[in-house]
Length: 207
Image: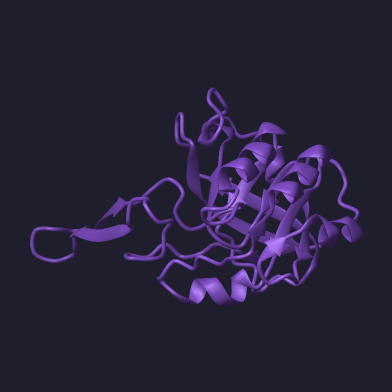
């Protein structure tokens, strides 16, 4: 098993403008308390998480209506060599097929998660590549930083293209330990009623 999930930590990196991550002990063993208990405060798109269509599409499906087959089953890790973007010309040679589950491994995995400061120039999908993938009708797409779209660059367009095509999005993966190739993917977000997204635990199993 390869754990792709980023540990949730107090003060960890988050998308600019989203709520900060706060994890506080409200009970500790000793004195009048017989157990430990923590208070968690964070946005629904913190760390390793999933986007539901309702994140960008009015009336779109919410995270509690996720079809489990979208994120459980055979998947491919595809390497991205471009230092800034996931471009169509780099995708075409991989012959991605309809209904696949695809995870893109870029330099983000080895670079971005080392800092609690937000990395603005992370590798992301272009609007053109999002439209290309939308045409393939994939089950899900995963990326190794906090957004499939760039920071202040085509982010909404990229999300709408994928989500509008019924493609569920996994963001915030750390693919450092996963070599390119075929695996079995298991990614389960918290089942938040009416949620636009939710933190998730994502793992790969070698075939």
